[in-house]
Amino acid sequence: MEHYVLLYYCYTQIEDPELFREEHHQLCLDLDLRGRIIVAAEGLNGTVSGSQEACEAYMETVTSDPRFAHCEFKVDVNDQPAFQKLHVRLKSEIVHSSLSHIDPNEKTGTYIEPGEFRKVLEDEDEDTVILDVRSNYEHMIGKFKNAVTLDIDNFRDFPEKIAELNKYKNKKVITYCTGGIKCEKASAYLLEQGFENVYQLHGGIIKYGLEAEGKDFEGKCYVFDNRIVKDVNSVNPTTISKCYVTGEPSDRMVNCANPHCNKHIPMSEEGAKIYDGCCSAECQQNPDARTYDGTGFYQKELNGYNPYKDSKRLKTEL
Ligand SMILES: [Zn+2]
Image (tube, rainbow, N blue to C red; front, side, top):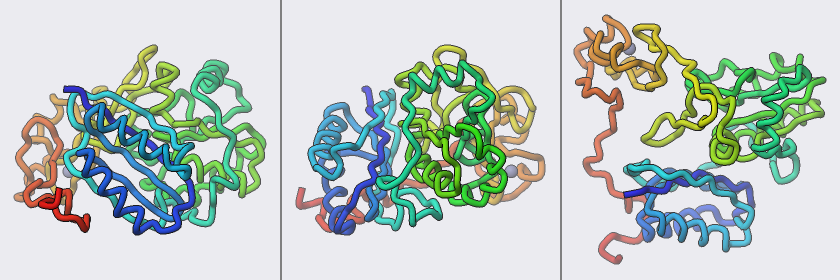
């Protein structure tokens, strides 16, 4: 069976985010969707999966609300469900950024669409900087050709890297991320810091893969669902990451089987055999090391998971 995977965000004003969260959670339950959604006064951010009918009904319901009329969905098709659980959470920001003072509806970088961005990548103009605003574990496994990457483990550390970026102040800077949401604030922050020529890849790597064949994206795109990584480049795909154990090319992301290490790293199937799914002999010897089942993916127990947990309506009322 085909499963649709939706990725979307929308900066808009939500007057009563708590009530909205409750109603939105109910909508997802009614449609039997799974995934992760964040609701805040500044908007909505989510990735969900479900049947084609459910996902289409969801998109129609969301965009029929005038507050979300401009919400754009990236739609992927997967042969398996991308999530096992549903979480609809209320937070202070829809992406944790340390940039809560910025409203992208007031100021943000100019959108550049995938087709135009593809030409920029082909031109390799020295006065244009392609800036990846994602974290280490994401750009390690895939990034655009010639992109500048940052040594950060979390997007909230992006503003700390401004000193490093000041040398690009006189250049045209184009930011990108997975689905576009981080760039809304990252590009706005660059403008705030005195950068003048700031653009953002509209819809991020995912939309670029869907609309511009992913050309010149090197490696795979890290995604926040069960797939972990996803192919986006159907023109000139490559592998840029190396197996942590063998050093051979590999874009298979795993966690070290030692739960105290849990390092999130590329490891080939061959490499994983060496230390039973651990990153080192030391981790392998840890008495708590988990059994390596060939996936390197240690799903938290589903025991006791109840999608209705945060919902006021009880399951029996459905
Ligand atoms: Zn380890």
